[in-house]
Image 1 (tube, rainbow, N blue to C red):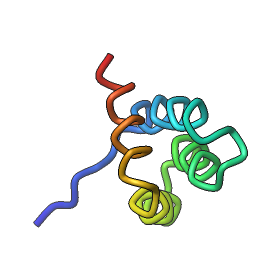
Image 2 (cartoon, rainbow, N blue to C red):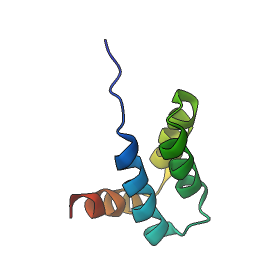
Image 3 (spheres, rainbow, N blue to C red):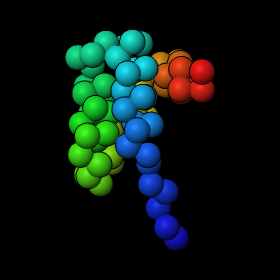
Length: 68
């Protein structure tokens, strides 16, 4: 089964949304920015793990900001 690739531009937009919600110095925000820049599988995996550890409300708010 092919693993779904995450669009680097979308990760960059998600980083901006998360910076607004959690702050620019939050570890997940920094990881998202790094993953968007490098696109490496290791950075993306780390970012995914950190994103899933966020409070559900923060995740939902960040995703909602992408839809607008």
